[in-house]
Image 1: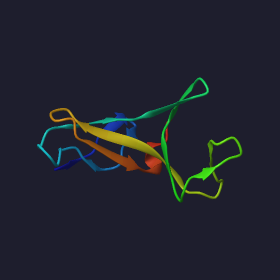
Image 2: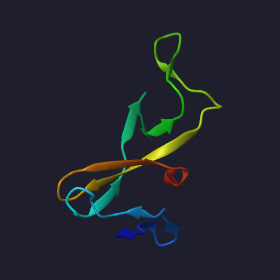
Image 3: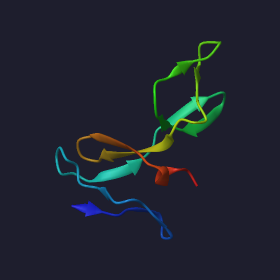
Length: 91
């Protein structure tokens, strides 16, 4: 059964099935974080293959497609589903 969840009464969320495909439990929305250089940032999906910079870290490309990642976790069995969609950009 598909249902629309909302972040707030004025911010509709994309239609996502909130019923767990493994056990039929309720899926709750959440997100993962990236702790980098003292900052806490949301994670993103980036198109293409990763590239290594001069000092060994990953470098991004301004031409790569990138989408914020949101996750849904089953409150019963713990199953996770991740979605990469522009609608999940932090506000």
